[in-house]
Length: 384
Image (cartoon, rainbow, N blue to C red; front, side, top):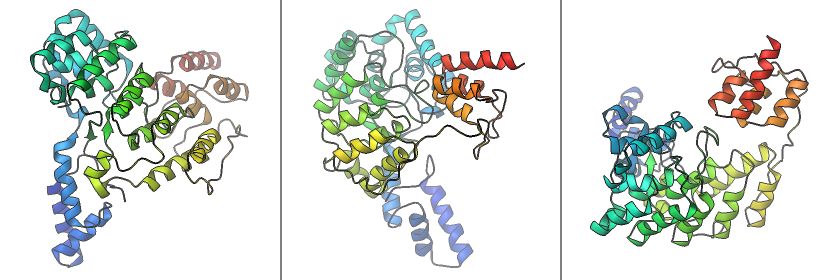
């Protein structure tokens, strides 16, 4: 099964929910607790309580941090890191780079700053004084240093050698290659690999992969990171690139035994079957034939998948359930050839969607698709 708990779940709130259900249905408390546990994907109340107690120690909500109250060192770590919320964006990371340029000594303030800056010399100095820091939580999110290194997107133009040197120092000193946390208490862990591979619902410009993703992921996998990383597979499923899958398959994704996180969280995590079915369904519905073929080559049963071949819309201004047009979607993806083709077919760049009240241009700007925004800006100006 897989947990369907809301973000930042609370045992007290769930106890209250069970009591309300008990009173409403006129049943025993244990029966109400069982019903609530089943509703959220657990086999019973004890399993739900066990998960919540684990999650209390493993959870972090990066978006809940009051950055105005942070000291400069913690502010650097917060601004530099992917937080996986709507605040992720290039301007934050540039502000972090500006802060470090103004105060270069921050990397010597603590190891979490040194890690987020991928500064191997500074990391080495901290570890020389206290090797145990390699696996010690701290900074604004309570993360270990490797988490800040892997989730950092600060534009410092670090070379791949710098990044790998800093990561190797931490791993050699005892950093766990399977480290991670539960984002807002949700049961799919955000691991080191998750941070390295990046992307997700906010798109590749707001939540990009690490600049040296392949080399850093290779290092982690060679040093023991488990290749079954459910959040990575989810975050990277939205676009047709399969480089993450190819790398993970090369390191045993298809036949790997239980991961440390699967053993720790048990039934709260999705099953392998659920993991693969999500991948198959998305690939089939979005015409990712290469992905289906890759999955099949590695023993994943895709026999029931019905591939939907993407087709150019008969009506370029047709709206989906959220009132968005094909031009909105193309703008979000930054698909320049499709944007041009839609505009030539009569797509109206001034149409606003029903959910956000935004034009395709505003979708492109929100996704930091600069090239698409420029094209749509010109098209919008031409129609006014």
